[in-house]
Length: 62
Image 1: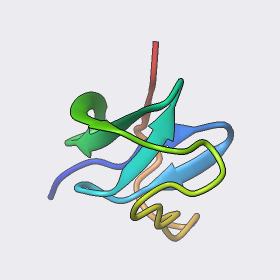
Image 2: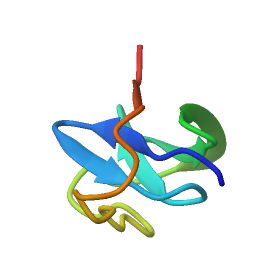
Image 3: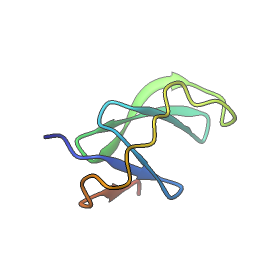
Image 4: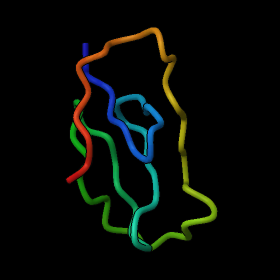
């Protein structure tokens, strides 16, 4: 089962995207990776915080 990612204290499912510093990032098995698209901090494309009772082994963006 793929791991979740965290960003700004929120948990995101594998495959979710978020916006950081004007660039889209994607959660890939517990690690944030660049998705390559520009974005707006006010409106991440697909942010879906994960259920907080799921996997606790999370990696944070560095």
